[in-house]
Length: 171
Image (cartoon, rainbow, N blue to C red; front, side):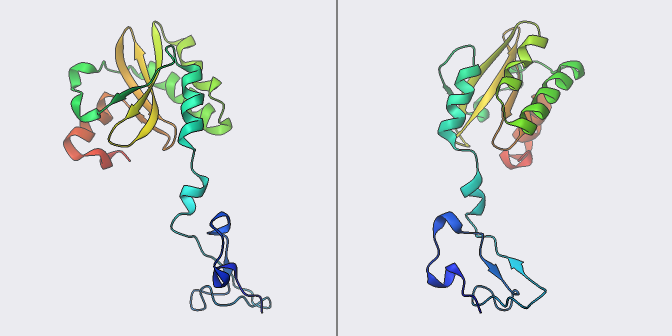
């Protein structure tokens, strides 16, 4: 029998990677002759592989028109702060986001403005989420906010739903 790391205290770097023979045995033992194995995911497993906020900040600032961060509380915005996102513009933004999601190159996000007229990208910090995100403005109007950590695009429709149902509506 092979004993698991968790039995000996485990290390944070290996959390979520312990393998057990079944849920009944949990972390106690692993039977190498068993055809069944269970991968136990620790509660902080996602945290270990999430996007580091400092590196995300540097990457977003590199593509922003102005290399400063403004903190914004979405609850203080109103629908009048937003301009409707046309379906054509939304398709462009979504295509660029899909490319970014596939290869994690922020240059894909930078090219949003090459297809939108009078476009500005700005790094902002969402106060209530404590996350760095990319604000997209067109003709000086807010049209979208993209959160790379959750791959969430907020436009006026999503914003209105959030204001009615709370911030967890779109998460």
